[in-house]
Image (tube, rainbow, N blue to C red; front, side):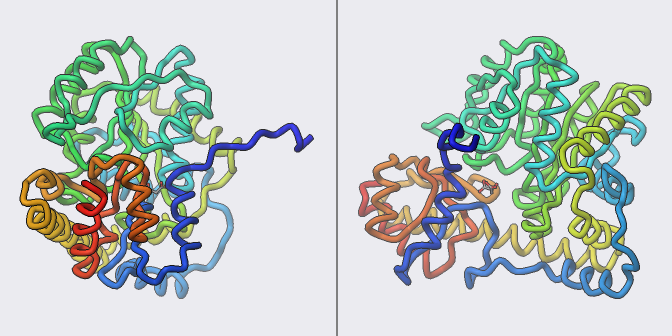
Length: 394
Ligand code: LMR
């Protein structure tokens, strides 16, 4: 039986991590997978999360199952974090899933059942796992223009031109903030225009929000998702706690659906419960419990917000430092966009060959489309990277 299987294409991001680990050069620099690193190259456990773990160790009395869709207290704190008071709670249904990826998968399965003729639209480019998963679930897909290569800002005319082609019932994936891989984001006016167009077309927004707090701030990064929640009758949301709580391996993500009314909410909740049961029964609890504790305890929450803010402003500083170093090395402002972008990633605009050269000759690892992880930078790495970019002709 197993001989019938065919070789699967490796995921480029995960493959690169393996290549980095196998590289024996002690000068190697990892700008690949989107994992936060401090100035020493470590991915720390956030202070409030560590404290919550200590409390949990003392307080937890059972490891028995929670509900199929996870704990209601987790849903509530996350709804507040992501949606604020933009939408009434009786329009929301939830499913805790293993990571943001798990939440996306559950949403795609829900789409397949609820809207079998829908096409899923995604930005070109997007996180490579978006098209891979949509294909895996067997849903037709289309892309919409996203990045203006000249200005390195959102190609808003191109995007709206493509989205004008969506059909009623189609689904449009939007990155809530910190667009992965480009770092270029919609401004507030553009969010409003996208919402109006999708409503006019009868299309359903699907917001993937994996980096809330890494861009302009916790509330600022939720502007788009909250605006759409106010304006659109229906919406799908996948939220990840991997990055902003630093709990990657705990696999903590959440599906939130926004429905027209309470009857539809009950239908969505029932389907989400069933999908969890069919796919993995109960979601992993530990990460969600920590998130709930951190968000509901004023002291832990204040400390978490302060540390997240240090992470965010640290990354902004690194963006500026790299843009300055490249300005000095190239004598031009062609990398100035790095300081303007937000979140963990930008794309340098190098060719695959140049990216390979960076890896082979300079031990610098980034994704083949020249996406680099801002958090992999530090004061020591920045001048090395700037010189290497110029050395490969960038
Ligand atoms: C990334 O884009 O590097 C992260 O979202 C990690 C992943 O799973 O790909």
